[in-house]
Length: 175
Image (cartoon, rainbow, N blue to C red; front, side, top):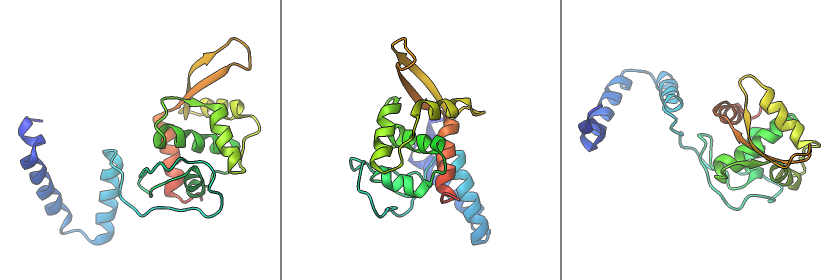
């Protein structure tokens, strides 16, 4: 791609091509095409804020658009994703810290502490993260371990597949 195509005139030209392509399509087809394009190029689609009633625990006021809405608190994200198992709860908690709070890596105890504040703690958070690591493709990877014992602190990071899984949960409304 040339430098001219990345500037304002390239942007306007691209908009013209998109408009010309979408114009003859009916509304339902346009919506599917735009959704595909947003997913293909990793661009979140706008949407209204999602609010969860109940617990105001956790959060810190972060706002993040995941294509389905803004989540100001972990409770909002949790309610929208509706995780069904301990492994899914750990995944949603990890997503909160990595993609919304922008933590560089995940601490299982920290994730579980926030889940406990919501009343949805995981009995064995390390086992839940191990379950995420064991999935194919892996939803989480371990980035480091401090200490040599079995109880050593482990740090994790969601993989792209893990991020996509949470976003799938959000898109399906927890079904």
